[in-house]
Amino acid sequence: MSETNAATAGRQALPLGDEIVGRINRLAAISEAPDNLTRIFLTPEHRGAADLILAWMVEAGMSAHLDAIGNVCGRYEGERPGLPCLMLGSHYDTVRDAGKWDGPLGLITAISCVADLNRRGRRFPFAIEVTGFADEEGVRFASTLLGSRAVAGTFNERVLASKDNAEISMREALVQFGLDPEHIGAAARARSELLAYVELHIEQGPVLEAKGLPVGVVSAIAGATRMAARVTGMAGHAGTVPMELRRDALAGAAELICKIEELCLTDGRGLVGTVGYIHATPGATNVIPGQVHFTIDLRAPTDVHRNRAVADIVRQIEAIAKRRKLDLRLDVTHENRTVPCAPWLKAQVAEAVAGEGYPVFELASGAGHDGMAMVDIADVAMVFVRCRGGISHHPDEDVELADADAGARVLLRLIENFRPRKAAG
Ligand code: HGY
Ligand code: MN
Ligand code: MN
Image (cartoon, rainbow, N blue to C red; front, top):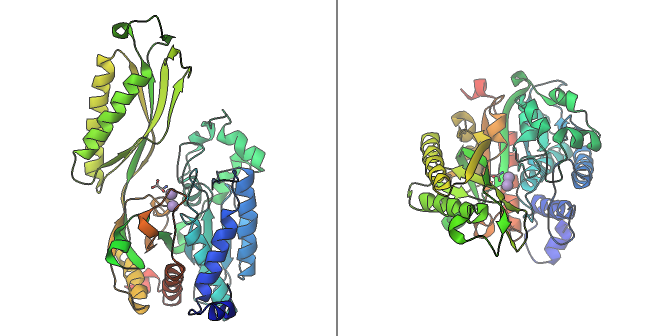
């Protein structure tokens, strides 16, 4: 809705918020399914979204390109060409049946901020880059932060061999998408090219809403351990094998999963555990399941706590598998340490929040973000925006227009007052 429409609608014009919400809805229409939002790495939907975002970047006055792993990259030059940049961004892939704000809000807000600066002819003693990461969620290949790891130069070529549920390897998927798997290294940036990385993102939790605040300053991004579990028993006839002779992989997996839940529930110090995917074979009503695959996602406020909890959970579920005469294989598919936001940069986020007239409130992120990879080449900080009910990774995920506008004004103020570390002292 433009400013005039806003006036006729009898509310204060929120030009940044209006543009952002309109684009969030446009991007959300690009999905593999008509009845839910699912946009996965290296798919036609990835390509469609990339083309739309690159066009927005050019419209905002940036040069824009798709990099070697499918990230969208925009650059707004500083007072002279070739200056190091303040990098902004977020991811534009989604989970399955996703909300439309997780990722795109940060990316679209950054583009709108640059467009506003371009309209006003503002140039700075640094460039501004906006990066849309192609695979933060890790839905297709069970390995996350692929786009930001490629930019940070920490992409592990081993994951090229990992296969999706259709048995297509990442290597094949890159070729089918029109990218060269041997060329991913070209996406890597040098630390000297970046002054800092700042990401705006929805909180994905209930804290800001409980505090009655539209924006927050992130203190740290919680680490995570993800594992793939494979339980192997013995398939058999549902009608003839007595219960005491069975090695039922699915009944066993169920006990393992309940044990994981019980250990997290009784932890009482912020440990969270999730089994988000399970698949049993052969998958017939009248056959005792012989094998089960499921995923485990474990997080805690500190790495020490998480690593201790992982070790304890592994020990306890291995004991259950042994008692049930099941073979249990556990592979760590993703591990990320907790990443603190850089104090000097976090202070500038807080300054921008206060400058927009909001109370400064710091909170940790239980969700993972691309800053966990970008920290290898730049100091990182994050701006959180309130989301309704703290709901995320769900189609009901939602952000008030006024909060989207507030987040944009905070990010814009941060950019206009940004001082690189040496100047920031
Ligand atoms: O899983 C996460 O925390 C993030 O949404 N990828
Ligand atoms: Mn997410
Ligand atoms: Mn996200």
